[in-house]
Every structure is written in structure tokens, then in C-alpha cells.
Image (cartoon, rainbow, N blue to C red):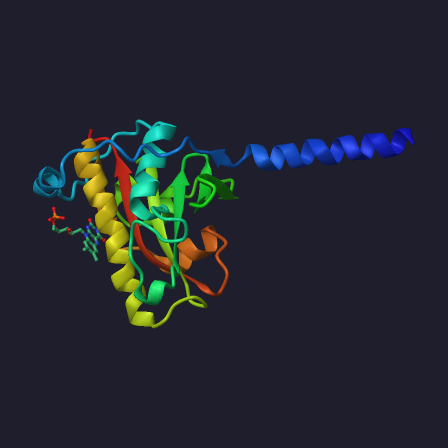
Length: 201
Ligand SMILES: Cc1cc2nc3c(=O)[nH]c(=O)nc-3n(C[C@H](O)[C@H](O)[C@H](O)COP(=O)(O)O)c2cc1C
């Protein structure tokens, strides 16, 4: 009996450890931000990134703006035939996470810091947030559409960053094979683009 209680305790501890690695985000604040026309006026690419981390509220707002649910089953970014074939992964210093938009949680997929592998520009290794847009090839309607669909997510990120005074750059220059390996993607998942977000230096 004692042995059984000991084993159950160990299992509970291990599962607590597993959950502890995920990051529960605060609810996104969907009321803030600057007027759309001003955000469009400020939208730009920047390649200057400080190492300062984004707080959890800003991260939650950013990811919701990028591809969160703005209706019960649809998102801030459109997809062809509503396939919702794209997923957002986030490489932080503490690991690489899948953005579970329904539960507003970052689910840890990799424990290591893989930011340096998310692109070829030197700043990716030290910038606080590198978003990677992934396509699920089993969900896609047509291969061409995944690139169009990713563009909407990227522009959502650009506009959020313009509104918040954050720096961002979308990056096609990615070693997709190395990144897919580092992210432990399945053979059905494809890296579309990376996008770095952070404070300007
Ligand atoms: C599909 C796409 C891929 C891009 N790839 C890279 C990249 O790999 N590295 C980079 O530094 N910038 C990249 N950029 C950013 C462009 O260089 C930038 O958008 C362009 O110079 C125009 O500047 P603006 O965004 O400030 O208007 C990419 C932009 C797009 C739309």
C-alpha cells in the first residue's frame, strides 16, 4: 500500500512538472491599441532588437492579434475554405511552444533555447520572441494557399507591433530542415516563415 502511495505521488509530481513547463497566458486585452489608420501609417520592418522580454500580457495580446479566436470557432486571420491549417509556434529563451489559441496557453514542445535556429539573421538568437508559422499539410486545401494565409497572420503581427511600438520582421530566410528538426515537427508539418518580435535597441 505504502509503495502504491509512493508511486502515485511520484506520478503526480512528474505530471505537475510537465504542466509547469507550459505557460498559461492572461486573457488577451482586445480593447486596446491605436486606431487602425495610425497603425497602418507606422507599419514597418525593423531589425533592431533588444534582449528585453515581453511580459505575458503583451505576449497574449500579440498572439491573439496574430491568430487568436475572435469568434467561437474562427480566428483573427482568414484561411482559404476556413481550413485553419496554420499554427503558431513561439521560440523563447525558455523553449519552443505551440500557441494553443483555444486555451490561451503556450504548450511547451522543446525545452531548449532554439531561437538561433529560427532564422539566418544574427539577431534571432537574442531577440526575445521568434514566431514560427507552421502549416499542417493534412489540413490544407491547396498548397499555394498556405503562403497567402500566412501573410494575413504576419500582417496582423506587423500591425500589432506598430500599435505597441514593438520591432518586428517577417523572415523567409530560414533553414527549414534544421528548424523542423530542432522543433521536432512531424513530417506533416511545414515551416512557412519566421517572424521576430521585440523591443527596439
Ligand atoms: C515574404 C517576406 C519574406 C521576407 N524575408 C525576410 C528575411 O528573410 N529577412 C529579412 O531581414 N527581411 C525579410 N523580409 C522583410 C522585407 O525585407 C521588408 O518587408 C521590405 O524590405 C519592406 O520593408 P517594410 O516592411 O518596412 O515595408 C521579408 C518580407 C516578406 C513579405
